[in-house]
Image (cartoon, rainbow, N blue to C red; front, side):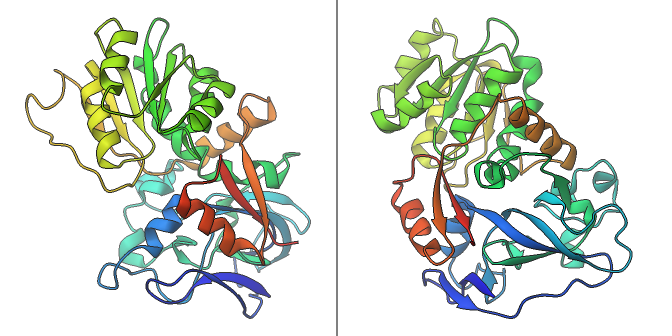
Amino acid sequence: MKALQYRTIGARPEVVEIDEPEPGPGQLLLKVTAAGACHSDEYVMSLPAEAYDYGFPLTLGHEGAGVVAAVGQGVEHVAVGDAVAVYGPWGCGRCHNCAQGKENYCTNAAAEGIRSPGLGAPGAMAEYLLVDSERHVVPLDGLDPVKHVSLTDAGLTPYHAIKQSLPKLGAGTTALVLGTGGLGHVGIQILKAISGARVIAVDVNDEKLELATEVGADETVLSNDRATGRIRDLTGGLGADAVFDFVGVQPTMEIAAASAALEADVTIVGIGGGSIPFAFGSLPFDAALRTPYWGSRSELIEVLDLARRGQITVEIEQFSLDDAPRAYEKLHAGSLRGRAVVVPD
């Protein structure tokens, strides 16, 4: 079968022929219908040799959807022909966090060598994907996999981040979204769907801010040295009650810290490598700084429910598997309007 693999430090991914996997006990084999490209993949492929520990060759794709093609012995609740989305952050299934469906915070995964698809285990940028447990799929239940596969990360990650800040996002509050691309444009829709907050969106050019307006942002601000002042003006000098940085580079993190209100949540989702000091006085009084990771299985179910009700959509650009390297070229260049989705067929 064809697969998109990262095979050498510093190289770009390439389409290769590999053996089709077979499901063992408890496992599922999916015929992949869609796979999403993500900045996390770019992060992995940018690591130097001494920091890279994901193994070679690495089949990319931690956002996946497919139709069950075969099941291993002991699989009871998923059948051949089922259309499913893959819950990506795989855990042990036994620890306290996994028992709550929070496998994104599994306390045994590192010690037991459990890796997520595309982030150590073979991913979804292939014609077939082996899923280690029926626990790690949820029904698509009528959703188009191509239009919605990105919700397994680009929807789940912002949903998890936003949901934890909902107590601070009632009527009359302000949420600040930094970065309105792959994650941010979905985050804006989630904020409008489940909170009472006014949403201010920040990005580097008018085209990206146009998308933010299309998906529901109430105000937009260009990301430059005047951004913080503009945000303060829009909030009557108070700042934002919750800040979500979906980029995580130095300039956005500085805007995040400078734009927070008293008692605000400052949530850094993006992995752009920026940093801000965290000490008494570096943030407004009683502000909290958080770095969440992905989301729980139950939250993925909730995200897909929002999509079925038409409350969130994903701006996508579609690529064939043969053309998948170009998706990463556009991702690297920052020229995608939303998310890149690879369709094997």
